[in-house]
Image (cartoon, rainbow, N blue to C red; front, top):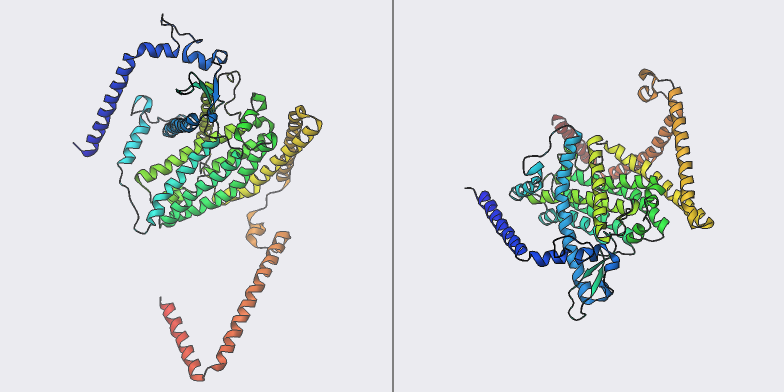
Length: 524
């Protein structure tokens, strides 16, 4: 029996024993547990009593409620409890996002996805994790060892930090064990911290995550990995600007950088900012795809060109960390997009049930993840020069247009009254849509009216000297040639001055040495 099989059997035995112990404890305390949940003596579920009634019926809650931040014990323990539960949920979500992608890609491409390990392939992520744990962990001989090991962690940790400033729901009122205070309930937040600079935090952390990719490529001592790292840095700079411009739109509308305030301003569906400025939402989604290196913006990996790019030299759990970072990035940016443009945890008519807010939030995030996977299954990878052109020539102008759109609507809405803003924003949207349609129609008409130039007559191929482009190109060439000619003149002048102090014998020796070097170079 192999060592890996023995380890797997040992883990399975421990898990089975733990499950039996948990089931025995539940059976032994079944009556008190059912009463605590909300079952009466007849075994019927009553939503007005027990924990279920206290959570779902606000009017049934006790009056002695204390804010969690006002108590030292609650303010110290609740963040730890929530962070542990949230970390478990998001790591489990990462594992099953891989399964979601494989199953959805299989559905979209008319093939069978993973269906062997567990029912409908449900245990496939666990099998993949076990496989990666036992894979050999390689370290290139020329790699910078410490940076090579730290790069995956630098990629993963900042992505987890993005979710720290995103509230998953409104405050909950929960029972709390506090002997010194008696029978009290605490109002606890469903988030770690709702910072008043949450938007700036998100922008800063998404930038830091790219350093993991850059350092991984640099430390690998591999030219393909280094090219992937260079692409990542250029891509980050190109799309970070449009990402920040898109996030400026909800900040301008709400007047706050706190993500909790932005979510609370979108209580009703018609108040979602995606309907008030769909251009900014589209720019944000495209920028987030580029920031997470997802198709069609996965130029940092590009297995056809760079053999997996920045993580070419990684294997085992380090490779798994990079995969984890990619899927965690998908979840994190979906959280950001849902929070700032799609209402966050608000969805009528379930706003009166705070305990269901995380479920609503997670449902919207899953829909965003399905959209990302759909894009991957539909669009091919774009060329690198077009990636850069799209970032600088399309995304940034559209981001500026979205900011100007919201600025005009906010200023006019404030002048006419708070209720006038949605109507002004809608009017600006109609104007922008009409102008875009006219421009596209004129461009199509101009292209249709132009006669196709035969290839043999095209100035781009014949080099014919005509047109403004030819004149500008030659003007730029002449401007570049001026310093080059000046440098060549200075070099020749200095060589002439150096020859004044040499004797004829030294000149002949130098000439014979140059001839020998030239002959040797020609032989090579």
